[in-house]
Image 1 (cartoon, each protein chain N blue to C red):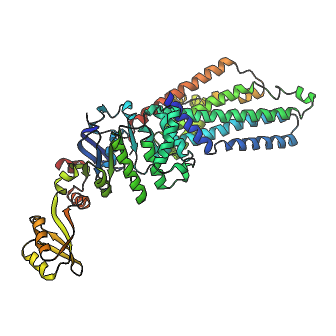
Image 2 (cartoon, chains in turn brown, green):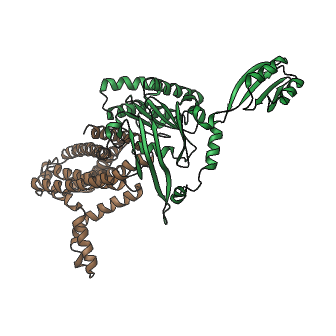
Image 3 (cartoon, each protein chain N blue to C red):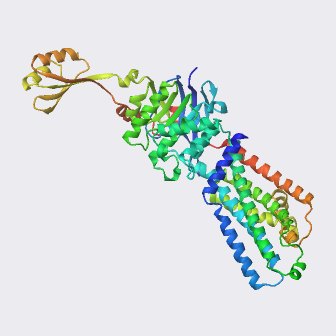
Length: 268
Length: 323
């Protein structure tokens, strides 16, 4: 565990110095700029649109970081041969992979936490710009802690995307890893459609394949409760727990796969 | 107990995409390195030196054979607490400083914080980059990265250290400093195993060497005992030697070849059969004065060239089996 912690801290330090946290500035500018524009253009719907936009931005910025850092984490070490020095230390190969994963997870957590704080600050400011009668028709208050549930599931989704990116990066190039990771993420968002594929195709083979993919691939749509929280619809804690556990199983399987592949690799 | 021991260590790769064929990178290497030795692992580029080091560090897995370091199998993580490794052309993390990198590697070795700070500071000074300790590594030159690489290899005060081309990228001053460092490591009882194709470094440092060519071990032992490096003649430099005295020495069989440096100043090559003191006595009796007398050996350079010419050019599996 000690070694995993040191590897993780190193990933975090590198990511921060590699200006990953600059994405936070882009996030803040986007959110504040959009809030101002929306305030000028819409009436009554402002708060809902800002919440939609804020949650979508957190998810998108997080996704970009998870994919574009995740795909290079292992590949870069192998390509630049820094792996030689690390693995000649008392570091087992699985500790290296788990440390890399934990480091990126930490980077994402810090990033999402800061984006969330900025998001709530914007919401709190916007709240002061409306009359009481406008606030009364909102389905939820502006500074609604319920949104944290959607953000929690965004974090689980990002942890899963990170695991996918690291899995691919243990054996393929960054470009291919990015394509495969984003591809899985897109398919995962349309997972429910795969289940009912036989309704739209005649081929039993295609329907069987689609059904098989439905069972094997992660259902990313399950992590998306942004619309519910914006409309103040209930998202029970039990749903959060089971969905997080569902994500954790995939993360576990992907990391086990990454470790198994990495353990057999020759670093020529 | 030997510091390093390999038994028939072999590595084959498959090369080619459409019709992969085996390539013998290392062929049945059997080697013993005693504790406390500075061991030179020599050979031209592509001889299999780096492959051997990677097998010993378990960066690649052997096709067959086995290897031990300090009496334990190379896969044992405890062995790695007691060894150090400088890869060829090392590269580290762009955004870390030299100080942070060494502290990171020391922490992976489990070195406590106070000791870590002490070792990092003293090592950075020892390899000559103390002044750049807070500079990010992306701003380092190749030679400076090499020095960082050497420092990280010994951050855990290893019992055995592997240096892959340690002089690469260093200027003459840097090479001298690293030679001194290697000797200090030896004096502390550390076994130094270093691969090189820079022959003068090996000649200056190594107590024993192994020479690899075409993936095969072609010679090993003490440099002076290797047949190839035995005395094959003498070179005598004299001054005050007249033409008549030179002709007399040639006729007497004392001199095989003479090269004139100036008036009455010659380098004389004596045949191996000649007795150098008798030849010298004869020349000085005729008025010549001694400048120097040196044995002539085949240089490692000559030896490499000959071995490479003799080694099988085809590194395919069948060629090696036939060999």
